[in-house]
Length: 75
Image (cartoon, rainbow, N blue to C red; front, side, top):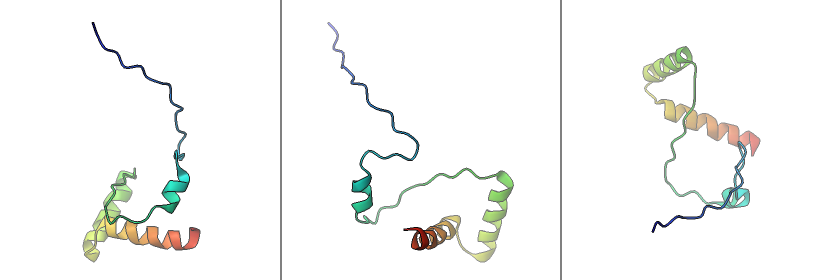
């Protein structure tokens, strides 16, 4: 006798779609950190990493600053 779980077919989400957009928009900051992966051209990444090191900052800090600025304009 084997137990088999019946799976219901779920609608596949399209790129950029979220099942509960309103919940995301109304969510409060939690203070947790989320990882974001970005694909960059290898040369661009090397140059970016090099300039960040010379300026004594991190790639994460520069990206976070730019995201804050972008959100000010686009929200």
